[in-house]
Length: 409
Ligand code: BES
Ligand code: ZN
Image (cartoon, rainbow, N blue to C red; front, side):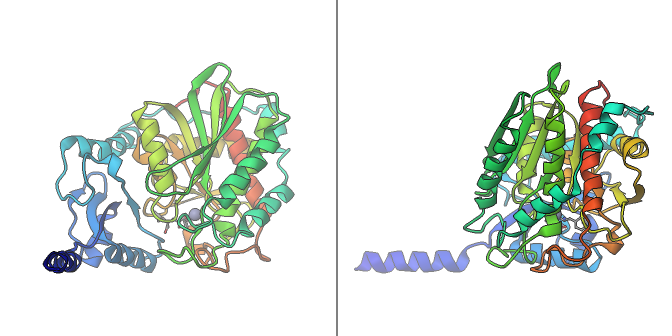
């Protein structure tokens, strides 16, 4: 009896004194200042700060970011990126190196003239013919399919329904193809939702990889949001659909010289979790990633049909230059410059590991779709699949230009 009492007391005290669970995040130092969180470490030269925060503080940061016209405002790091525990407030130099070395490398490439200038291209009839095969109606059908799931939230009980069904659909799409490919799901440490990867093996330089990706999870509200309706039609059934249409066209082309990998990422909406793990594992196994295209939101033409923003933060100047050339030759959209102001999507995960990235976006930030992250993010009269098709064409052109040449940053 006495023992039971002592046990109960210990349990009670443990509950009362339990530290709130904290997460380590990488964010804009100004955001931390605005919400009164002291950074664990600030890298003024890289414009980022590390901080260990509670869920409550994370929500405040997100709220502040929203007030400044941004969305979430942070990337969350995961334990295997650190040596030890994410609640620590001091880190070994090898942990810090893991976190910052990719960003330092990007800074060298971007600002110190270590990157090649973007190439001047001439028209390749094969690329033109392939971009002309993109069909906007198929993109619409994919968006309808994705957005019919009540939610694709990473923590919903149904979090892998769309994943497993998509895998089957993609396998069926590729079944008749003569190219060498694999379709696989990728398990994650921090979420039970899986990412999906389709790899088209390069015939001549298979170790050189071009990545085309977008997230297929959805959310309603900033946090939790697992049980509420989250159709996520624009964010990001649209980018996922634009990628699927690009896959259909590219897979009909025969084996590329370099490997092309298509990725649909898990759990982007809670801090880029799926892509962060994948990009970290590609870095640690020293994979030669030539370029990463991110498609996140492609069907809301906020600045008009075929006006596309090229995000200039967390992306590569070389890839942005390449986009301008490919657009001039094959797409004829109007490309404007804009920035997210923080690591707003999965390209930031790859950028942070040192890889060259590109993020063409459906509109400028100031005319963005106001329905994202709500139950109203559905296909409506403003949804524009000609606009979304331009993004498939970008993916096709990037895959063919980088996939069949020796160009690199
Ligand atoms: N698609 C959005 C990002 C976005 C929104 C880009 C508006 C440009 C304009 C993305 O899915 C998203 O919501 N990302 C999170 C960031 C993440 C680190 C939690 C966000 O912005 O809140
Ligand atoms: Zn998104």
